[in-house]
Length: 478
Image (cartoon, rainbow, N blue to C red; front, side, top):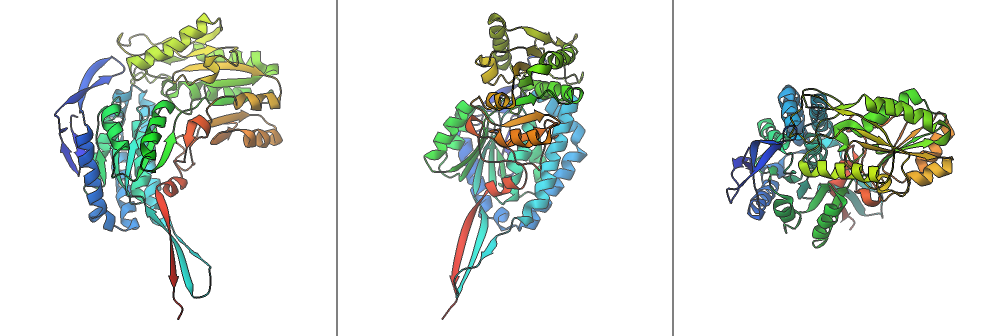
């Protein structure tokens, strides 16, 4: 779709240029996008500002919520069509794409119901004074979305901003943005006033950079690499804007010798193969207590050997990676690990019948991986798992925290005291005990520490991120 969505209308990019949309399953072009630039960002920001000063800004919180609830219903009514679009755009298995669309609808439902429940407070103060603390929208919010979960990320980032009464300008990744564009049509049908939501597709260095540096935005949220996140934060710092960043992870699965190994093994495989490992919260480090290391890693290896990457329709463990550059990057990690002499414990398959031009990488398990090797420290963003043994609880904690990242972690043990001790000492934003992930986790605050970023998305806390606080002090004495 070679159109931008600005002020409730589908418009061509100012320069009239387009970008190809490539199917990761084949490497072939199947559509085109408008190549928006700074001029289009100007139009989108102006439309958002006008909406705040017009119909959108005048709506009550209850009415905003009703629009989002209607969006949820419309998304669910068209879920299969949207899932097929998401699967082709990203290459992910169709069952995962269907789940993503369901989760996107749940975001609209959750924040639609929460929109009129963000309350201010009255503060007891001196006699003759009335003090209230109000929560108000920032204004025009800028959203830079990644390519790995475009539908879910729309719900996670844009929907709470709208629920709080902000007007949004979105720059999705040029590698996958068809579902956010489709959601624009749904938002308009649901009654969202013109200008409340604007989407400018294009390159990050053009449209994305222009958005984060724009003089009339009030807030920035970005999900992506730490390197680009730093640039986004620097651009926002010029205007002292608040920024929420989610920048990836190197998340550990810590398996103690008393764990339910049969239960854990399925979670371990899914946590690294889901979405082809192209997930910030992927469980990419498997830390196993030495007494059960050989046994458990053998169990995981057996499951890995049975795994496969295939087309969306095949609905295997994972699909292709998003593009040729990402495939080359992941293959580079695998090649370097092999050259370093790290054993390959198991490797899955690329299913027969896939297109030879697709960006497929078979799931791969390495171990034992040296603790200082880049495979144990750096984010691969592919279906590659590093197994590492540990000895004691203290050793596990130190090893789990020994990366620049801090997004999520899992603790596998039957010992209730250990569950609490280890969870409290993890330096990350989420800890799962005897499970991993939460099926979208719309209700659960999500975000990281250290190089994984700052601020929180999901749950009610996201609404607090998308608003500012104003204290009103009224003297009513004589």
